[in-house]
Image 1 (tube, rainbow, N blue to C red):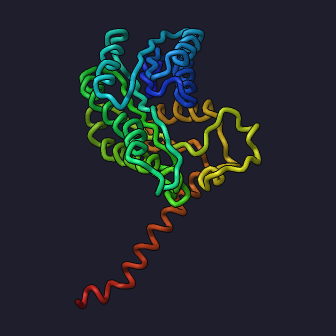
Image 2 (cartoon, helix red, strand yellow):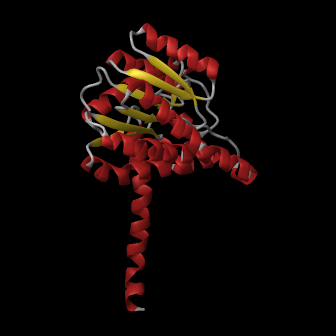
Length: 271
C-alpha cells in the first residue's frame, strides 16, 4: 500500500500507547482516522490530535471481544467515510502471573481481546474491504512474544499464546488476501515505552523485557516503522532490531528438536 492520502484508517486500541502513536502517524501520512477503544476520555484526546494534523477523526466506543461491537464499528466507519483502506487490529491486554496462579478468567480476558478481538475484526471488515476498490491493507499487532522465545515470558502465558496465534493467522491469510487485492502485515514490537531514555538501566521483572533493555523504542518510533512497513508491503514488521537475535535463538531450539529426532531415526525406521 503506497498511498495513504485521502484514505481511512481504523485503529482498535486506538487510545493506547501504540494506537495513539499510529493514529498520529497515519494522520500525518494523509488518512482520516477511526479511533476504537473503551476509554472515552482518552479517545477524545487522540481525536483532537488527529484533527490538529488536518485530518478527520471519528471515535467509536468498542469492546473488541464483542462481535456486535466490531460490527457496529465497521458500520460507523463505512457510514462516515465510505471506505476503510487501513485496518489496524491493535487492541490488547495482559495479565502477568505465574502459570500456576492463572484463572480461567485471566485467560478469557487476554484471549478475548488479543485473539478473539482480531477474529472479530476480520469477520466484521474483511468482506467489505474485499468489495471496495483502491489500496487496502490490514495490520495486526502481535509482538516479539509471538515469534520469539516463549521461555523468556513465563509470567505472560496468555499473552504469548494469543500473540503466537495472531502471527499464524496473518501468515495463513497472506496469500488468499493478496488474491483479493488486500495486503496484510503483522507488527512484532519488542519493548515499546513512552520515554526510552528515562528507562535506560532499569531492572525489568521479566527476562524478555531485560532482553530489549538496550533496544527500547518509543511508540512513535514503532508507529513510523509500521508506516514504512505498510508502504513496502512487508508481511512481518520488526521495529526492534534486537529481535533478530531472539528469533535466531528460538530457531536454534527448534533445530535442536530436529537433531534429537534424527539421532533416534534409525531405531524408529527399524522398528
